[in-house]
Length: 185
Ligand code: ZN
Image (cartoon, rainbow, N blue to C red):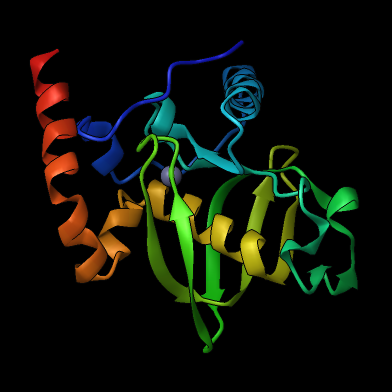
């Protein structure tokens, strides 16, 4: 089922999401619906607060582009994106690499808006899957970026918070309008 994606201005996007202690059938169903919703919107990631539920659940799938990473290891073993994707996970914990890089980024809660965001290039992430298994993911490129972006959502952090002040100035008017649009509803 395709869900409505929450737009910027809705306070749920600023919520510090609750840890998931038990994967109930409701949470499994929510994850399935989030997958349908992300695919329908042609996104590479979606976090539960973006469909109005403030819990630490997110999904990521960057398998559309096999070239978007230079490596992927799961529990120390080399994997291809096709083998590993999608990731459906709860309660992520990330260790960041030291090297940073700037890439253009977007978000399904900000339609048609993109900006340059500087982030660590590589991460080691501990993701708990819905079956309770925790995996260690080491990767870089778009997958590392997407995991960071979605984990930020679970902490109430949005990509505009990480935008250079120069790119943010250009978007200020549009962000204000989006916020106004929400308060009118
Ligand atoms: Zn986003």
